[in-house]
Length: 465
Image 1 (tube, rainbow, N blue to C red):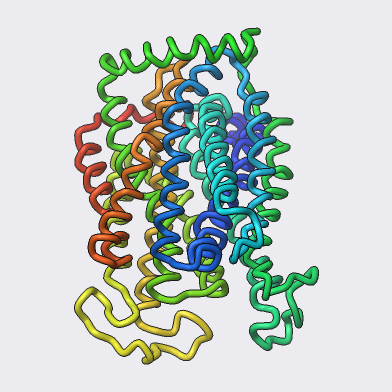
Image 2: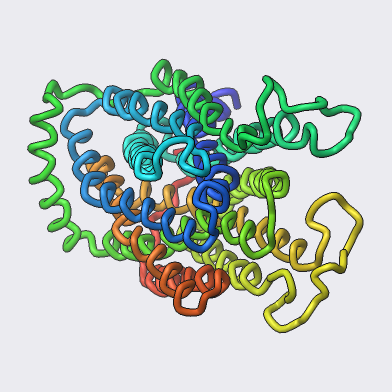
């Protein structure tokens, strides 16, 4: 019995691999989705529609860079063996780039808009590069039977950390001075000035420090591959041939190619929902910092369950069926979210924008509650799909090709990174409606869903393997 328990136990190295996401993932939720992204669009740029367009351009640029580099990075890592030195170098660039976003201020008082865009692009590119290396360590971080569980655990921990930090920002910086609750400070902690938008901007240094602190265990305890002795320059030069051979090999691995193509569309759609969900709520429903933080806390709690749900669905039904269910739920929830505006629910049901559904401090109207409910379920389904997709890639990848294929996995995530922003921009501009732009993301989910039906699922691995 003891030996059986030991065989399925997640050890210290695996926990350290998962805790890397505890340290890294809050950057996305704090800086991209719920706080800094909407702040930049609505306050720094000053116009939600133009802000959405500019932010889309930055994400498009980051996506192009990742698409052109991620496969070569993964192949170079395969040639070098060890992932940790490259990962450390990437984090040394990423953390300062995140920190500099604190200086995003309106009226040209902070970083120039071009420089703010540059650090945002840099941090997002480094995030994607870190994903390639971190994901490629997954098959070696634990036993094959525990890959699904560990993948879900990492995402669950990343969202749990985000909940913790969002609650901290809400009660330490956003609510003080805004509501008269006896357990709150009278003013934002550390003397932050609300007039200077510091309660919004402070998330950048918090995310940077958190990243550095919780990346340490991975470097200390998670198993790395044995070095081949090849230099970085030689590995990068050789990686070009490796990637071209891998692309040619995809003709012999048509199932993997089809999965990567399907994921290219549905993952782009899911990421677009995350990027534009906060901007949409701020522009259409008029949410401010307090509401966006509360929104982030609630959705991050739901996303924690999504990480575990992904692992459970994988083990019970297999990763392919799990992803199909998760995309379907995401599609239904997206349509529901788009159907909510200040004056309508479900597109056609008119409501009085001043009528309240309850007497709470926030989310008081029926459209706000409808949007929130759909977003809670979509948080579960998106996180579960990320976990299930990563598990499916790990199961489909032949031994020795993990780095290359996870590089292509990142490429499938970035090759169409321009497409979602283009769809959102085109439909928003054509119809002068944020709803139309947000709804266009459904086209990507439908394309990914249709392609995924044709993918042959990987073999199921028993719990004692």
